[in-house]
Image 1: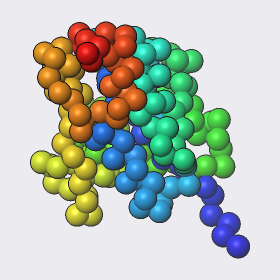
Image 2: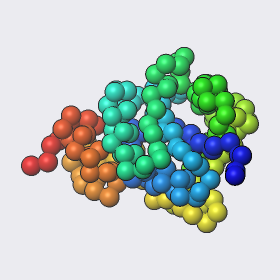
Image 3: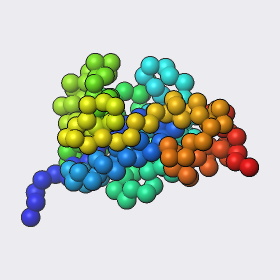
Length: 188
């Protein structure tokens, strides 16, 4: 019998919108066999003041995007925490809410490279050991890499009326187009 505490991953992000690169990171994090569960946490209020689609829209899109992953759950915890949203606050709140869990911070290799911009990253890493997933175009972790898809490029393509197939889950694209998010128009 294994007495090790359950290992849960924390995968945070603006998810503005959540794209297939995000889904690949989550799927790979789960496939590595180190996590029992993955909590996907959309940022409620960006710490650098970045303008984002409204919170309810991003939360709904995240739920659509990550629905195919049975062991992944989208959490709205940041809605209840002080502003601005900070990974340290969120991870500390999760540790308090789930004291028997060993947390892992799921990050892309590109994000880890920018950890100097994070609020007290060393403390975050003490609470949730980083599980680094490689990203194409960046030095991959453990020889694995997910597609290099950027939310900003997806938003620009939607606003320009360009095709985003292969970058968004179909359900997320339908949601965006139905609501006119990012300047997208419904498909004819």
